[in-house]
Amino acid sequence: MKPSVIARYLDQYVIGQEDAKRILAVAVYSHFRKIARARADGVRMAKSNVLLIGSSGTGKTLTCETLSTLLDVPFVTAEATSLAHTRYVNEEIEAVLERLVDKAGGDVDRAGSGIVFIDEIDKLKATDGEQRGSSGESVQHALLKIMEGAQVKLRSGAYIDTTNILFICGGAFVGLDEIIASQTHGYGFIATQRGDNQRILDRLNTRVKPTDLFTFGLIPEFTGRLPIIARFHDLTREMMVRIMVEPKNSIYNQFREIFSDEGVELAVEARVFEQIAELAIEYKTGARSLRGIFEELITPILFVVPDQPDIAAVTIASLFSEPTYSRKAAPVNAPLAR
Ligand SMILES: Nc1ncnc2c1ncn2[C@@H]1O[C@H](COP(=O)(O)OP(=O)(O)OP(=O)(O)O)[C@@H](O)[C@H]1O
Ligand SMILES: [Mg+2]
Image (cartoon, helix red, strand yellow):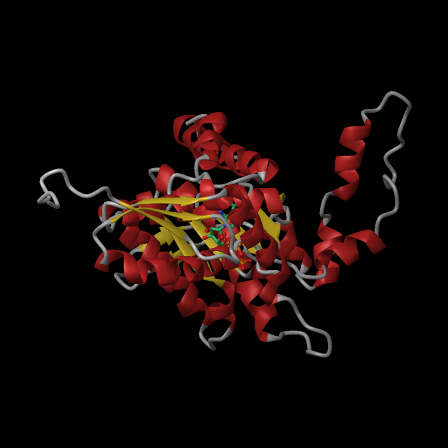
C-alpha cells in the first residue's frame, strides 16, 4: 500500500495534521518494505519507530486507531502509565505482546510484524526530585529492550521476536515547546549558504531534537530508538468545525442519522459549530470537548422528538436560542373539517 493511499484514507477521518499523516504513512510503508526485503534477500535494515508529539485531543490516538483499521496487521494499544503503575513491568509488557498475538489469531509470526502503539509515553519522564531508577525510567529501560528486538517468552511457552514489530509512541509532552525554544542555537554547525531553501532550514530548526526529549526527561537510549518524530498541531477553530461536520462518522452525521430514524430532519447551522468550537478552545482539551457540548445541545431536543410524530424538521440556529420545529402538514387522508 502506497504512502499516498494511506494518507488519503486517514484524511477521511483525521482533519488537518497533514505533516503527521504523511510521516506516519511513509513510516508504515517503509516498515513493511523493509520486512519484505528482509524476507526476500535477507538484507536487514534498522527499523524506525515513531514518536507522535502533540497536545491532548489533537488526534494522535485517533490517527493510530484509524491506521490500524486500514492495515491488515495486528495492532494493539498500551498505556505507558499503566506500565509505570505496576511492579511487574516485564509481565505487563508480555501481556501487551500476548494481546498482539491474540489479534493475530494466535499466529506468533504474524504478530511479529504487527504494530504496538504506546500512548502517554511522556508520563514516563523522570520528574525533578525523583531519584534515578524511578518507575518511569525503569519502564523506559524495559521498553528499550523489546523496541530494539528481543525474544520474549509468551505464556504458551512460544517465543515472539519483536525485531519486526513497529512501535509508535505518543504523548502530549507538555512544556516541550519551552525546552525547544530555550535550546535553539540557529542551525548548529550546519553552515548555511545563500540559496539554501529557507523553508527546509526552518523545518530543521523547529524539529524536535533528541536532546530536547532528554531535557524533558526521557533517557537518551530511549529517544535514540524513536528516530522519527511527527508533531500534531493544536487545533484551530476552523479545524474543530470541520471535525464536527466532515468525517464520515462525524458527530453531526451521527445525530442526523438518529433523527432521520425518527423521520425528522436535523439541521444545525454553521454558526452553531463555530460557537461550539469557541467554547472547546476555552476548555483546552482539543477536540475532546466538542462531543460533550454538542450532545448537551441535542439532548433536550432528542428527549421530546420521539413523543411528537408530527415533527418533520428541527433547525438549530444558535447555541443560545431555542430550536425551531417545523411540523408535518396534516395527512391527506385526514377527515376534512365540515
Ligand atoms: N485531527 C482530528 N480530526 C478529527 N477528529 C479529531 C482530531 N483530533 C481530535 N479529534 C477528536 O477528538 C477525540 C480525541 O482525540 P484523540 O484521542 O486522538 O486525542 P489525543 O491526541 O490522543 O490526546 P491525548 O494526548 O489526550 O491522548 C477523537 O476521538 C476525535 O473525535
Ligand atoms: Mg491519546
